[in-house]
Length: 105
Ligand SMILES: [Zn+2]
View (cartoon, rainbow, N blue to C red):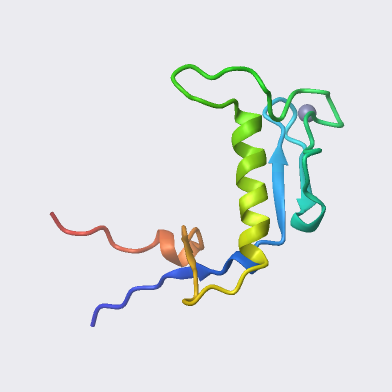
């Protein structure tokens, strides 16, 4: 018997967005309801930047613009009732998922 486990979440399952500092490892979670144009821009522990408005090579928008745009649309998505049920599939990182036998070539 072959079985497959998929982990699906709906947009309203997302409760907060986490920002992990690449310098000191401190993590901040901001509830989606509190996310607005004033995103956490720097780590409160070491002042390292989380997100910058600097140009990104070969990209039209800065990281800050992309994140703000995504969050604005995501919050809108959470408030809507779509005709179908929209689900996101996420990576299964549970210990049992890691013990899956590799696919044979
Ligand atoms: Zn930090």
